[in-house]
Length: 193
Image (cartoon, rainbow, N blue to C red; front, side, top):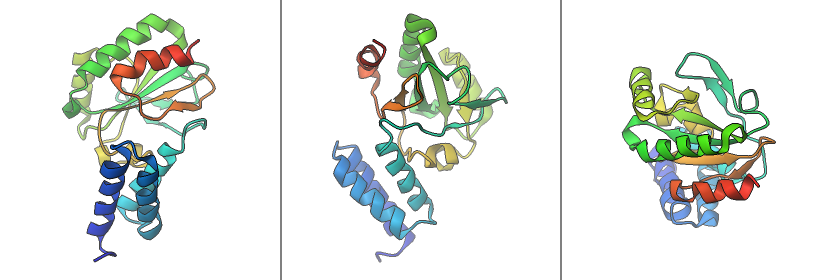
C-alpha cells in the first residue's frame, strides 16, 4: 500500500535510520524527498521536508524562534544570540539530557560572551520541562512546544530523535547540523578561532 499513511511513516523511518542515522546522507535525502513530495500534507511529509531543510542547512541561516519556558519570546536572530556563536540543543526531560546540559554549561562558561545556548524543549508538559531545566542547571532560554516531537519546533527541522545539537556561527549560519556531545568542544574550537 504505497499511498497509505503507514507508507509515509515507514519511508520517513528509512530515511532516518537507514540514511541519516547510518551516516548515509544521500540515502536519507532520497527517502525524505520522496516522503515530502508524495505526502506533502501528512505529518510525515512535513517532518521529511523539515529534515531536508536541516540536512541542507550548513552555511545557511535558519529560522528558529517562539515562546520560551519563561513565557517570553526568543529568536535566534535577535539578542542575546545575534553576533554570537550559538549551540541549539533540542532536548526533553525523557531524553536523559544531563550529560549534554552539563557540557553545554561548562563550554558556555569557558567561552563567556562568545557563546550562547538556545534550548528547544520537546516535552509535552511545560511544568515538567521547567523542572528538568532547573534540576539540570540549564540556565539559558528554552523554546517550548507542548506538542513535543509532533510540534512545529521539531517538524520544521525534521527532528525525530533526541538529543540533537546544531552549531550556528556569529552571523547566524549553521556550521554543524548534528554535533554530538563528545565532539562539541572540538567543533567549538574549530569555529571560535
